Image 1 (tube, rainbow, N blue to C red):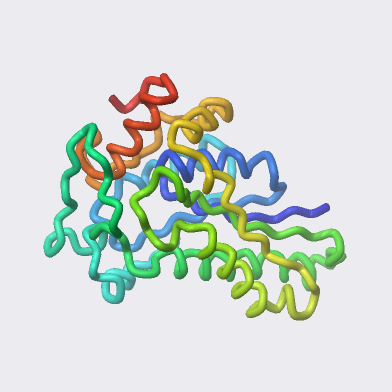
Image 2 (cartoon, helix red, strand yellow; image 1 turned 180 degrees about the vertical axis):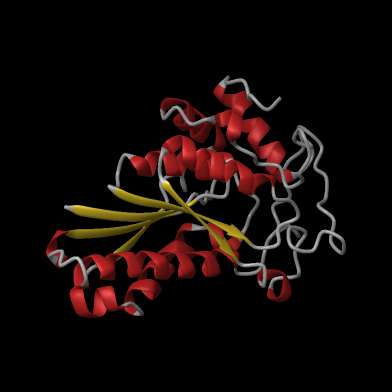
Length: 241
């Protein structure tokens, strides 16, 4: 079987863990990182280092126009909508927070699927691979247990996206090849993700989860609180602290 895959690598704990997992599942793996006008570029640098250490192809896609359309977010428009602090030990707000970026995962998955389809179509139509021997997979590190409540991180979203992407693709329409959308950690707690990252020997010192930049995590935003909870419950020391 000729396996092709795209993994969405933001540079955070979750995406680094899923990317490490995907390296053992796919022969031709590309890590995709989006530069979408996020409030800092530190996670992008982390993604580059992680991909290099894992020895996989890395593609940085400029999606800076997202700040023009998905501007109602603390991650794309921090001057207007500051990241709200969450005190350590407090519960993360169950509502959808201002750090949600409108339709971000819908856009990211669509572009990643287009890249994956291009790779596989080239393999079939130019390199003459037999379609029956080709497998195509998208890997996304979304989580629906210990997360910030984003609607595009829930299982039902990915089920619908899987159907939509395939019904709109040449791969499925002409060759009967499904692009499978895989979310390996979607039902794991943050502590289980931390343990999985340890088992996979993820370079945790290169990951960055904080919504802010700087030399060290702020330890106050939702993402920092969730990360701290995971490491604490897994009895693992966070190398960033």
